[in-house]
Length: 122
Length: 326
Image (cartoon, rainbow over all chains, first blue to last red; front, top):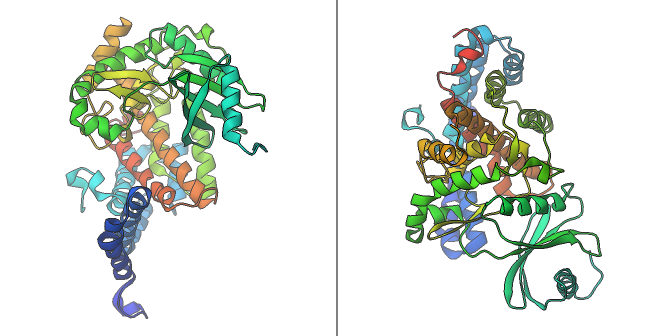
C-alpha cells in the first residue's frame, strides 16, 4: 500500500517487522544457544520473508493477475485445473513461462538466494 | 501409557526378556517421532538400539524387520537385527546393534574428518543400492506396492483442498510425469528414503543403511532419483547427495548391477522426488495450520514449497513438447 493511501503513521508494517528482526538478530541470537537459538534463526528468516512480501507483494499481485488474464483464466485455481485437463496444451510454452514467472516471484519473497543469479531480483 | 511408577524400568525389563535375560542398562531416549521412539541402551555392556512403534502407526514393524534381515543377507551394510516382535503391552519393537558414526548431513558434507568419505560415498551408495535392489521380493512379503504418482496425486489433492491452495507448477509436473513414464519393467525392493541423514557414515565412508520404514516394492531407479533431489544436497553444488556427479552414480550402479542405468529414468525419478518433497513441505505446514502442532518452524516450511516448484521447472526446461504444441 502506498503511503498516501494508508491512514497509519510511520513506521510502516515492513519497518515494524524489520525492527523486531533486528532485535532478534542483535540481542536474542547472541544470548541464546541450542534449540532456542535455532528457532530464533528461523524467526529471523520468517520476518525477513514478511518484510520482502510487504515490499514486493502488491506489485507481484498485479503482475500475477496480468499473467492469468493473458492466459484467459480468472484465478490460479483455474490455471491449475486447465493444466490438469490439458485445456491450455496448445499454449504450453506460454503456460510454462507464466508459471515460472509466478514461481520466481514466490521465491523472491521466500528465499531469493535459492535461485540462479539470472532469476534473482527480476 | 504405562501406569507403572517407573516406565523406564518396565521397558528395561521388557527388553531384557526380548534378549533372553541379558542385563539391560543405560536406557537413553534418542528421538521420538510421531510413529516411533528410538532408545539407546546396553545389554551386558554391548551398545544396542531399540525402536518401539507407537499406537496408531499403521505400518507393520515386523515387515521392516524382515527387510532388514533380507538386506543383510543381500550384502547391504545394515545394523544387525538382534530381536523383533511385540512387547506384552502390544507395541511392536526391533532391537538392532549400535553402529558408530555420523548421520548429520552438514557435518558429513563439510567436516575435514569426512574428506575421504566424501570421495568414496557415491560409489558406496551405488553398490549398496544395487544390493538393496537384488533382494528377492518373495523374501519380504507385506511391502506396499502403491504407485508413487497416484499416491502423491492423492496427497496433493487432499492438501490443496485442506489448505485452499493450488499449484500450477505441480500440475505441470504431474502432466509431464504421466506423459514420460520410464519403460523399465524392473520391480524390486526400494529403500524409499535413501539419502544423507538416513545412512551412518564414518571417516572411511558408508557404514550402515538405516531407516527402512518407507521400504516398498517399485522401480529401483526411485532410490537413485530421490538421492539426487536438491533438498538432499544440503546446500552443496554436487547433485548426488551433495557428494558426487550423476555420471558417477550411474556408472557405479551400472557396474554393480551389470546392466546400464538409464539417465532419463534417473531424471524422471528426480522430478518425482522433488515433487514429493514439495508435497511433504505442504504437509508439514499443514500440521501447523490445521493446529496439530503449532510451530513457526513448520509454518515457514510452507514457503519452501516453491523451492521444489523452481527445481522442477529448471529440470524440465526445454522438455515440455510431450504435453502440447511447442
